[in-house]
Length: 75
Image 1 (cartoon, rainbow, N blue to C red):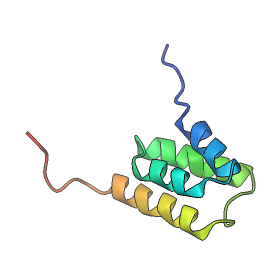
Image 2 (cartoon, rainbow, N blue to C red; image 1 turned 30 degrees about the horizontal axis):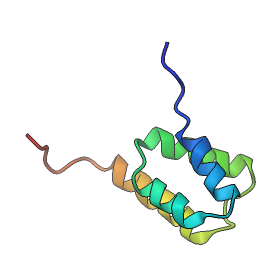
Image 3 (cartoon, one colour; image 1 turned 30 degrees about the vertical axis):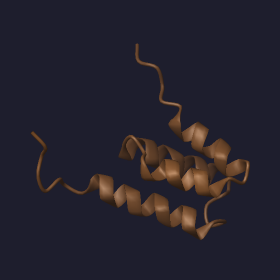
Image 4 (tube, one colour; image 1 turned 90 degrees about the vertical axis):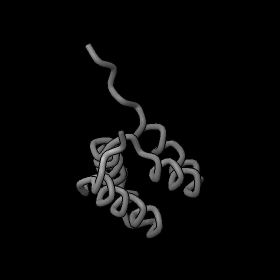
C-alpha cells in the first residue's frame, strides 16, 4: 500500500507560519498536478485562498504549466 503524499501538508505549514516565499518556491517545484490541487483544496478548506495574491497566482500558473503537454521528451 502506497504512503499518502504529505507535500501539500508541508507547504500548508509554511503558509500558516507566514513564510510565503518558501511556499512559493516549493510550489514551483511541485511533484505533480495532483499535489497542487490537494494544496489548493487545503487552502480553500483553511479559508486562506485569496489572502495572498502571489501565492494563488503561483498555484494557478504551475497547475497550468504541469497540465500542458510537453513539446518534446528528453532521451
